Image (cartoon, rainbow, N blue to C red; front, side, top):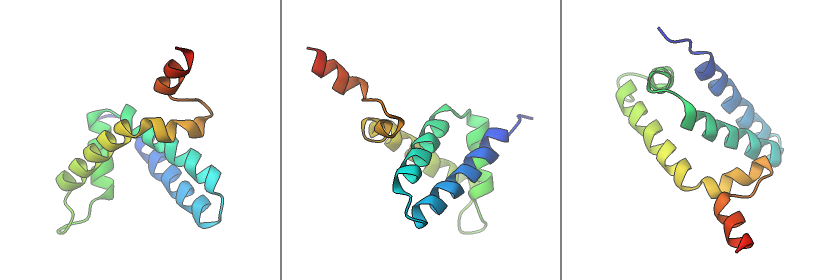
Length: 101
């Protein structure tokens, strides 16, 4: 059985991001959400399935459906990385390459 500390940390950090946003700390919220995007991309399949299990509720939202939602979110985050990566204080690779040419 895998150690799911990353999954638990991810859930708690996501709650912190929502709290920061609700309290008007948009920059902090954006940074925390960007970190969450990156964590999702780095999680193993086993960790993603554990996250899906934690976020599911039967009968309307079974773990397998949540798992597929998470996988779609990861795909979307990967496609939009050039937008959210800026919250780390770095420019996306594509922007850096085009500026250097």
